[in-house]
Image 1 (cartoon, helix red, strand yellow):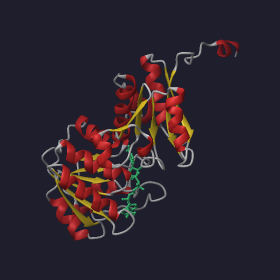
Image 2 (cartoon, helix red, strand yellow):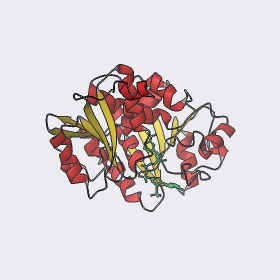
Image 3 (cartoon, helix red, strand yellow):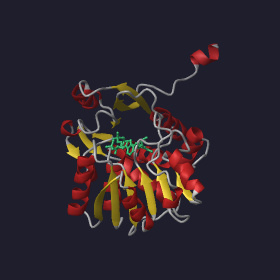
Image 4 (spheres, helix red, strand yellow):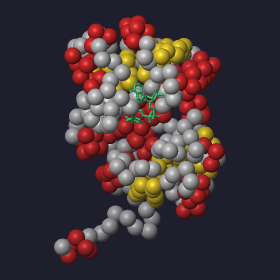
Length: 299
Ligand code: NAP
């Protein structure tokens, strides 16, 4: 007991602080991911969660400057609201219209989005190429927008984007317009309830990506695709959900004999690794973190 009390703390007067500002956020895996990586590499950083709503956000962002934090992750409900509070915006974050990572360079705050790059990297490390290929993507919320725009910027040839004709349809329209105006990718919008259009677009896509909340609690029993005949064996199926590890969509893909099926763990890991590199200049030890957080389970 005594030895525990006098054990030297990793935190000292030189520790550099990084935040995560969102609400609700106590459940996040990011503090464990980043603090474990700091410890593993012997970096004198600490990553802490701050419960911040839109109301506290201006003061919280000013505190990044005033207290000299190296940066912060930003999550719901602050990803859009943070933009006017920053000094600079990465071009991809500007196109996506959201920020999940802030970097503080001597009081100058720059906003980035790493969800889309996390998605692309997760595919890359699995040997999946979607550059110059066609993707069918469902969902135009925060994740779907980041994935669509980053994929278009990185050189995906065509995106068939689906969303139900409701809440996010206007965002989906805007995403398609931005992609067609600013990238070489051809994007087309469809109604996610039009299953025949979905079947047709999937038939000549190399990847089907689900960036909806379907499959995630409380929608564990929901899948946008219910019919396994919409999939073929050589299609790549990617679900952005990582809890549960296997979603209803993934089970349907399995039933169809799809060989390459991925959940959102890789995306989550690499969005963190990208931010980690921006703050520290070091590569996150991703294999170690994957083992620690996810028990090495990628599917
Ligand atoms: P969001 O902004 O709330 O958007 C949710 C999207 O899901 C909207 O497009 C919504 O469309 C659609 N949707 C919800 N229920 C649906 C249903 N039953 N059928 C069809 N579409 C439905 O949420 P988000 O932040 O983008 O998150 C979306 C998913 O991505 C979540 O599962 C989340 O866990 C995951 N995610 C993963 C990572 C990662 O690192 N792996 C990172 C961020 C998010 P409507 O307009 O029709 O409602």
